Structure formats: structure tokens, C-alpha cells
Image 1 (cartoon, helix red, strand yellow):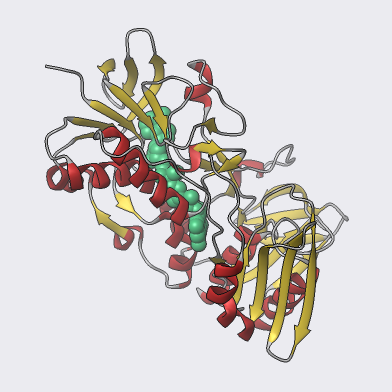
Image 2 (cartoon, protein in one colour):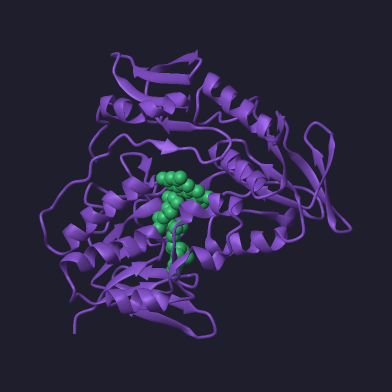
Length: 390
Ligand SMILES: Cc1cc2nc3c(=O)[nH]c(=O)nc-3n(C[C@H](O)[C@H](O)[C@H](O)COP(=O)(O)OP(=O)(O)OC[C@H]3O[C@@H](n4cnc5c(N)ncnc54)[C@H](O)[C@@H]3O)c2cc1C
């Protein structure tokens, strides 16, 4: 019997490939490894779920066993792929409580996702008590730490930090947000828009400490004592870093695949090895990582089409908008391509703030909206020029 298609990872990308594949091919054997318990859930709901105080179990749409049964695949939970032997076409695995093993593949799909960035060079006895929330397991742990506690410090004031702060506040916490740069949302929103979002967060009750970060963090009884970069003291019960995520690409790098900030793929999601593909947040095409759920969904369909011998469609980047989910502001961002030469033009009105990004030739290449102007999202999105093909 020929070796199965092997998928590494059971996030929206890994399970997405399985689902899309089964639409067209119910027979191809599929074997999937999950480093975690393999439960299917929507990672992008983790921040808003904190506001709703949902238990982790309520976020699970299907267990590994249910996914395996429903889509006719073998799903191995708590099974980490630790190496790829490209010559023999096998992956080496480590399953908790069992000896290491091997699994042969006909084709291999890496869907290892991304992990939260942790603050570097943190000092103090409680430096290891800084939490992150970028997986269901981390969400579960954070929820347990929040039980009976209220005072939370969020580290990082870009989009993930603002969303986390807003949602923790709505979930009943007293929230202080520390941002070392001189304003919020430096990497995503232009100045006026960021200023309006900052106002909204403050009015809702988030305490914002701009141009400040954590220098030391010490355990003091049940509390955490934070000394900030500017020398101020702050007492918290829970500290969460929201500094964005980093693609998990070590496996691919160690196997000798072409890796930049993520695994480099072409428009068919193929890596530099013709038998190995990558999808989701661990992959990048034309210098851009697949970090938006709509891009991941589309790439998964393209890959499934290719894997089942269908029409070989090439993926193209499309402009995407992302609604900020703080619960304190209405805000939408359609980020222009990174590094593109151009300028933001912002305009504040009674309805909110509208910011348009034009490239040097005057083409609209991105936008940001805050307040009631967010109702212009669809009109503006259809006017943003196509970016580039992979
Ligand atoms: C709080 C939060 C809010 C977000 N909000 C939005 C939003 O509003 N809009 C948006 O577009 N995006 C949002 N995102 C981003 C979006 O959720 C992710 O881009 C997407 O879920 C990534 O899916 P993935 O399958 O690529 O990766 P992941 O969900 O990270 O899945 C990776 C899987 O691979 C497994 N794995 C890793 N290494 C191994 C290994 N060696 N062996 C076996 N298994 C392995 C992991 O256990 C995991 O199951 C948000 C993300 C977070 C954290």
C-alpha cells in the first residue's frame, strides 16, 4: 500500500486541508500529527472568548476522534513531528508516553502554525510567570490564572495587545496596558486612527502606559510586582504578553527547506522540496506570511485542488480587511503591502477617522477606518488594487 498524505498540525490550516481534500477525494489515506490534543477550534476567537468568559471546552467544535471519524483520517494527538527525513520520505515522531516512531509519507503538508512571541531579556523572580494566549492550551491556563483575580497587565500595544486589553476589560478585569513605543498600534494603524482607538480604550477604562514597558517582575506573596522601564512600580495578579506571533519553521529549516521568516512556498503551496507543502501561518509566499484567515482558507483550497490532481490553480494575494475586536472601538484595517513606497492620508470627521494609503503612482493600496466610517469597508476594499501574484 502506498504511503498516506501526512499533515503536521491540526489548526485551521491542517484541518482545513483535510476538509477541502475530502470534498473531492474520500479515499486518499490521510495521517495527521497534532502536538496538542488535536481538538478543532477557532484560534481567532481566543481574545473575544475572554470577554465572554467562555470555558476552553466551549470553544471546541470537534475532538481529534470526531475529526478522524467525520473525515476518514488517522489523527494522532499529542504526537510531535521532530524531524523530516526527505531522502526516505518519513517523518520522525515523539508521542507522549510512547517511544519515538516514524511515519512514511507520499506527500507531506506542514501546517505547524505560529507561536506567541515572548518578551526577551526579562528580569526578576517572576519573569517566567508572563503568560501568552495563542493556543487553546494557553487559553485554558490563562482562564485558570484569572479565576478569582482581577488586576491584569497586558504587555504590547499593537493590534493583539489592544484586542486582548479590551476583551479582558469586558470580561471584568482591571487592565493596564504597557507599550514601549510612543503610541499604540505603531505597526498597523496610522497616527490619527491609532489616537482615536487609544481614546476609546481609555474611555472604556483601560489604563494605558505609553512609552513604558516591563523591566523587572518579582513575586510578592500572591502578587506580581512590576518595575517599569521608566522606574514606576505596578502591582498585578496576572501578566500577559501580546507581542504577536512567530511562524514555527524549525522543522522545515532543519530539514533543509527554503525558509525565510516562514517556510517559502510558491503559488501552489509547494516548498523547495516537490513532495513537501506548507500552509497557514508557518508559510510565506512572495515575502508575505499567511496570517489572515481568509488567505489561509483560500490557500487550503488551492492546495487541496493540487493534491487531488485537479486544475493547478496558482494562488494570488488579495487585499484583506481585518476588523479589530476590542469591544471598545469600531476599527478596520486593510494593511498595505509591507515596505511599499507610499503615504497615508488621514482625515478625521464627526463620523470617525478615514485613512487611505496611496502608492507613488497614486493607487489606493490600503486603508484604515475608525468609528462609523467602518461602513465604507466593502466599497474601499473593492477599490484597492491587486497586490502581486506568487
Ligand atoms: C488571539 C488571536 C486572535 C486572532 N484574531 C484574528 C482575526 O481576527 N483575524 C485573522 O485573520 N486572524 C486572526 N488571528 C490569526 C489566526 O487565528 C491564525 O493565523 C490562524 O489560526 C493560524 O492557523 P494555523 O493552522 O496556521 O496555525 P495554528 O492554529 O497555530 O495551528 C498549528 C498546529 O500545528 C501543531 N504543531 C506545531 N508544530 C508541530 C509539530 N512539530 N508536530 C505536530 N504538530 C505540530 C500545533 O499543535 C497546532 O495544532 C488571531 C490569532 C490569535 C492568537
